[in-house]
Image: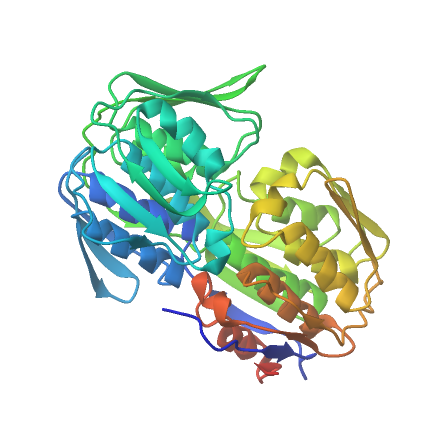
Amino acid sequence: MSHSAPRPLRAAAPAAPLAGRLGVPGDKSISHRALMFGALAVGTTEISGLLEGEDVLRTAAAMRALGAEVTQTGPGSWRVAGRGVGGLVEPADVLDMGNSGTAARLLLGLLSGHPIFAVMTGDASLRRRPMKRVTDPLSATGATFWTREGGRLPLAVRGAADPLPIDYVLPVASAQVKSACLLAGLCAPGTTRVVEPEPTRDHTENMLRHFGATVSVTDTPDGRVVTLEGQPELVAAPVVVPGDPSSAAFPIVAALLVPGSRVVIENVGLNPLRTGLIATLREMGAALRIENERIAGGEPVGDIVAEYTELSGVTVPPRRAPSMIDEYPVLAVAAAAARGVTRMQGLAELRVKESDRLAATAALLAANGVQAMIEGDDLVVQGTGGAIPGGGVVETHMDHRIAMSALVMGLAARSPVAVDDAAFIDTSFPGFATLMNGLAGGAPIGPA
């Protein structure tokens, strides 16, 4: 599980257009939550399509350490025998969350409501990421946290013996902070209430209902109010994990940028709070169609058909950021290939991702001959009209999405694009290079 030697990769223009049908790995957000809610439910939860990337395997290991029985029964198929709400036990060792901010922040919510002591750490990237935005509201439950300077991991938590419900107004829209508060509220009597300024991904609310909790959502002039009735009995329920729209973004953009391409990505999650990239690419003129729409496990899914298109620059409004927060690096690659200027507004949240993703995205473009500027919290990209120079080496800063975005750029650039380390791609998209090479009918992505 540890990353020692870096794995440099490079991508060059393929000899033929990208073509074919593919599935992308299971949705990471839903995979984490399926394991956590399975651990809190009474009975045995069967999960299919689970993302078996490192981040999610860390969550599986953490749930095991907290007393749930978690077993893999086949590729993507898992079984979780839960302990009921409030039933988690004290872990015997440190919980190592690897590279996963989602797992770490949601788990802090779970631990806050249980009268147990736990210590959490992560890899070098995760130990740099701020946890204070979660520990501050969670302290209202009665939980106590000890952290490194700046609220960073490793940290220790002693959960509340008699947890109190939380009433919290989010200063910045964040699905992770919202979810942590709701998970803490499961163990508290009474109503937990979270107000978010902009709607963020609602997988936690959907899955809580799927497992039998009472969750209500109301839009008010002050924001979206999410309430949870505490101490529900969660009952085991099967979960079918759809393909991750954030992972689908990479083959979608690659197909749009490589001339003559047509790619179908099957069984992708189409939760409306996750489809900001599709809306944006369509505004840029992209030939994108959705086929075979259906509902699975409380979530809308469908197949996405992407065909090569000459794109035009657009302005992306700040209110769209929560629905595509992980897709900005690959959108910036599409913007680099488009005609005209693309301005992505309101990207403050990108500064606290796996890396300072705003700075890393601007640097990715600059290293490959594309003009880009950060103006306040906006990223402004000057499109090349389909003639990205390329030829650069991109510093990934241990960020899987920066690495994959750079490799997609290499497929569409005049000169190959290299990344200093691609080892971290496995956290969210195991087999990424193999799958992209399969669409190209060759190996445009290979060792640098």
